Image 1 (tube, helix red, strand yellow):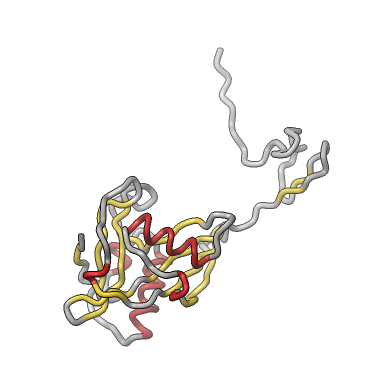
Image 2 (image 1 turned 180 degrees about the vertical axis):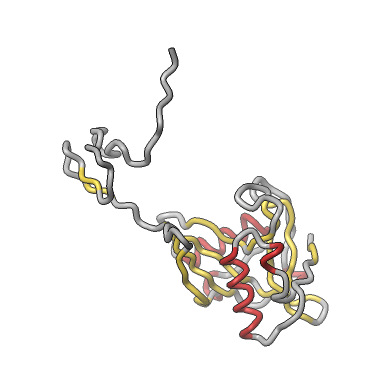
Amino acid sequence: MTVAMTLIRDSFCSYCGTAYVAPLRYPRTCAGCKTTVWANPIPVSVVLVPVRSGGRTGLLVVRRAIEPGKGRLALAGGFLEEQETWAEGGVREVREEAGTTVDPATLTAFWFTSTEPRPNRVLLFSVAAPIDADALGTFTPNDETSERGLVFGPGGLEEVFAFPLHAEAARRFFAERDITGDQAYAACH
């Protein structure tokens, strides 16, 4: 007979292994070692990289090769590692996902927001210094991203972006620069 086991996050103390007492609510304090754990939001650094191409400025995007949003576009970004600043984590994600090198010193804070309806992620959007399309570096598809490209305007972003908050950040970027029109996606290799 096989017994199905439902895994519940933080059901055992990660320090001493003692099971937490039901009902499982946060914060949880271990009956054994008295260590307390919280369910804090996870920080995500997302970088808007302006790219000059053909006399206009677009934003660097990647096509996701993983869920959620597989096959859709996103800005480069991801979860921060505990030893990284938001800027260091953001440029690491741009390098990993888009094959592009950005100097963390050039990033400026742009917009910070929480996910909805469950605020379990805090998105830290920043803007890099503009770069020319010929300085993007070599892109090689990987496990996370199948393609990189540029979007050139705010129109229709919600139809092609994987994440509504990425589309909102791009719309804000274009609005601040009085850039209008269709997103006009163009792949760049």
